[in-house]
Image: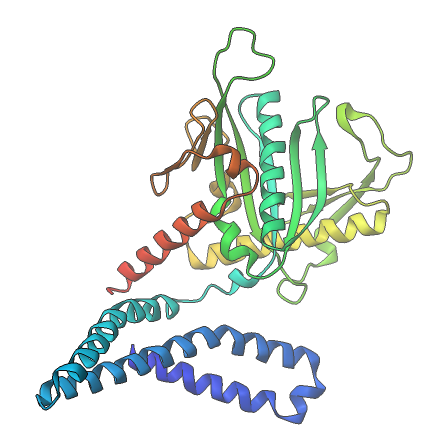
Amino acid sequence: MLQQLQAVVRRQQELLHKLQEPNAAADPTLYAKLMKEYQRLEPIVQAYKAYEQTEKDYAEAKELLDSGALDPEFKAIVQQQFCENRDKLEPLRQNLKILLLPHDPNDEKGVIVEIRSGAGGEEAALFAHSVFRMYSMYAARQKWSVEILNENDTELGGIKEISFMIEGDNVYSRMKFESGVHRVQRVPETETQGRIHTSTITVAVIPKAEPVEFELDPKDLRIDTFRASGAGGQHINKTSSAIRVTHLPTGMVVECQNERSQFQNKDKALEILRSRLLQQKQESQQQQINADRHSQVGTGDRSERIRTYNFPQRRVTDHRINLSLYKIDDIMNGSLQEIIDALITAEQAEKLKATGE
C-alpha cells in the first residue's frame, strides 16, 4: 500500500507541474482533463498526509513513554495523546485502502435513467411515476439537474416508460445502484376490497457517453419521424417532431419526443443511443455481472427484485444487502442517502475482500 500511496503523491505532483505549463493554460480541454485527475487524487493525498502525521505523533508519544523519564502530570498528557493517535491509525489505514480501490471512470459521469412499468398494469405505471418523482427529488437534494428525454404517459397519470438525464458531480457513482427491478406492495386506489397488490417496474441506469467515447456511423442508423403523442395516444402537436432512431447492427431503438423541434429530439435520441451502445461495449469487455442492459433490468417479473416498497408496513427493503428501513414516506420523497450509502459501503467491502485486504 505504501508504494501505491507514494506513486499517487508523485502523480499529483506531476499533474501540478503540467497544470502550470503554458500549453495547458492555452488548451481548455487539456487543462480540464489534468485538473479532473488532480482533483480525483487530492482526497487520497490528504488522507495519506493525515495518516503520516498521526503515525508520527503516535511514534513520538510512544518514545516518550518508553523513556520512563516523565513526571506524572506530563506523562498523563502524553499517555492520552498516545491512546488517541493509536485509536486513529486503524480507521485512517482502512480509509486509505478504500480510497486506493480501483477507480471506475464512469463514476464521475452523468447518467441516463430509463424506467419502465412491468407486471401490474396501471398500478405499475403509477408506481413508475412515483419512482421518477423520488429520483427527481433525490437529484434536487444532491444539486443535480434532471432533464426528461422521452415520456409515455397513461390516462390515469402513470408512466408506461420514461427516459431522463441527470447531470452533476459523480452522479453515476451513486445512481448505478438503482438498476434492477423495483417491487411495490400496496392497496391500489381502485381496489374496493382492500387487497394488497404486487407490481413491478424496471430501472436501467446508463452512464452518459461523450461523442468522443463512442462514434456513431451514419450508415448504421435509420431515422424515422412521427407525431408526438400524449396520454392515451392523443396527438399533442400536428408536426412530425418526434424521432425514432434504429441502430441497424444491433436492432436497438430509441425514441425521443419531449423537445419541440425535430432537431432537438434527434440530438437527444442519438445521445441516448450512444450511451447505451458504449455501456454495452464496456460491459462486454469487462465481462461483469449484468453484462448487458437486459440482464441489468431483468424481465419485470414479480419474482425478480432488488428492492421492495411495502406501503402497508411503511417499509423499504433492499434485498442485495438485507437492509430494511421503516421510513417509506421519506424515501419516496427523495431521501435515498441512507440506502445508497449502505450499498456503497457493501460494494467497498466486497472489493476489499477481493483484494485480500
